Length: 92
Image 1 (cartoon, rainbow, N blue to C red):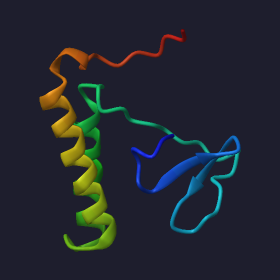
Image 2: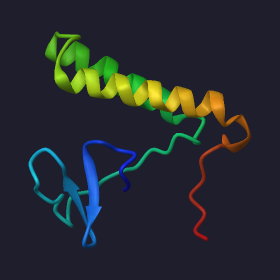
Image 3: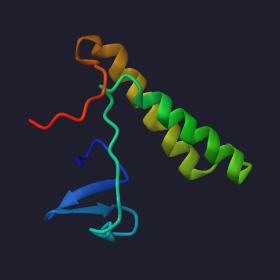
Image 4: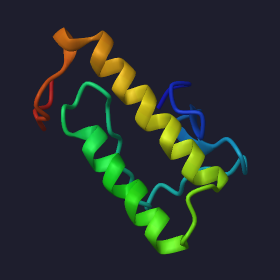
């Protein structure tokens, strides 16, 4: 995690929710999407669509935050075409 995600931070070996100040429990699975992954923005757009359908609203703080992340991912892709790539699971 980094300050690139306004909702979470990585402190003392734990992922911390910035709004609540609470850590994500170690036994709770998490997944990170990186902007250089050519499919990430599509996954986030699908998530946004599901949120809007599920809650029946398109103007909540969470919807706004997700839309902002989508725009940040699009900007990154536009400005960093040379860094975009297919996802992989190889460990360095």
